[in-house]
Length: 225
Image 1: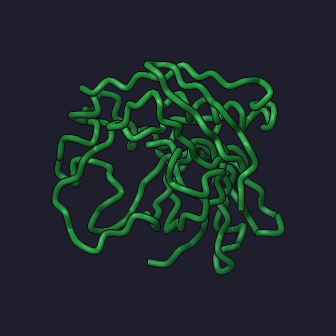
Image 2: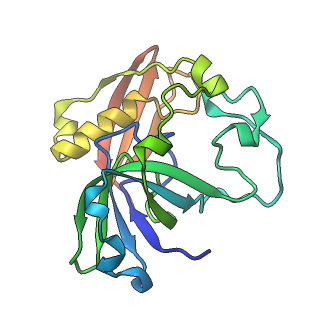
């Protein structure tokens, strides 16, 4: 397979990225095509579609050996399940699948045609192998079940961010940051109220602590080179 595009997102590293697509609906990203595929005709009709599937590569999570089981973060990192029963990035083939919403399609930019999407769970620079339209009648199964995902409750955190820090972002990015933090970006097996966590987002370093169900942002500073 060949890379057809790259995503540009606000996450230069893996920590902090939503664990599934669509969780942080205000999170915007841009799909930029490789020169070979910068042809507006390839997107003809896509303006009538609201959501697309992205097929992409876990470029920072490649495995040299096969492990039949993994530790899903949702289960606290303590219980093993079969790799094919999870969406772990550590797979025989490092392929990811995400459903995102189309916000805008710009056909004529300096980068060629680009697609602006919301809800992407991809790191900046992630290679994309293919794009397919989401088809509601075929792709939606409201009564579907998924074992441990259905039985493990995921509680959102209450997020405290001083307005003086939040004002460093545009309205959209501020909303997206709250959504990301509410989902608790920490590894599920870590629950240390004295520990300070941090990740990079939109050119800033976000630092926070978590006590009980409350996440407090302690510092937001420009990313250090």
